[in-house]
Length: 328
Ligand SMILES: NCc1[nH]cc(CCC(=O)O)c1CC(=O)O
Image 1 (cartoon, rainbow, N blue to C red):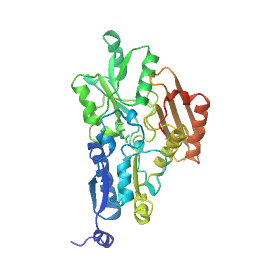
Image 2: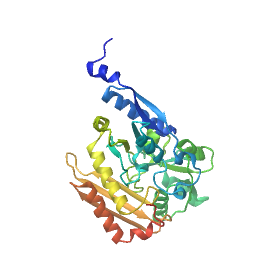
Image 3: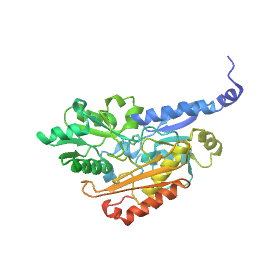
Image 4: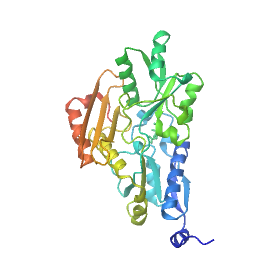
């Protein structure tokens, strides 16, 4: 069988090396993008496994400080030329642009919302309600953003809740519910979906209740800036509305000088079909949920200006004081 000419030529080139972390989620994400890049370029894509500090450390993410624990080893490999491109969860990517690398594509985003996986098929209102009669519902999350909003919601309902700091991969986290140690855990819906486990969610949390992390549900495809041919090819995976949305969210995060472990939620959504107008909603809160600054802005040309402008208004309203020790 003779392959089409372009593919025939491309197939003679060596495989493209896609650097990936070993976690099930990273492998699922990398596998999806590998297939898409292979279709796009006609070239083979091979996965190269790389261990990052975030995979090895057992400390809480907030402690190991910061941003970039999952991405720096992949970036080192890109710069060293041992891999050709890498796929990151965009929400794990520090906002500072790295020297020598380009964000070649931001593919179409999945559902950006958070999900609850709870015992006995229960929703959050049901869990909290039951907890009021027995003992407060114990809900696991390692994210200050999720804790802040969960606590704020429980306060607004006049119901108690106990947030339990956990971390680990999706399997580990859901395991706390299956073992009965926790009543529920909060996770990104996109992560569950990519693992084929969205069916285990007992509730998808509306953005009114829980604003996702900036960039949640989106992927970032990165390669060396000098590799212009590959960058050009990868840009075929870019989705312009997704890129605009995450640009606004990340500009806000950068202007707040907050990192991925700060109690900051942000979500940009297209306001009208067939328009480039986006609405950016954002929240900064204390982890106990007692104080929250929540604001929104709408704009259409410069997504990064929209994000920066909203951050400035939130800072003027006292947002900086709510973020605790800020990880840059
Ligand atoms: N910080 C870990 C992480 N990074 C990206 C995702 C989910 C996938 C995504 O947001 O794209 C997760 C797991 C989670 O938050 O449940």
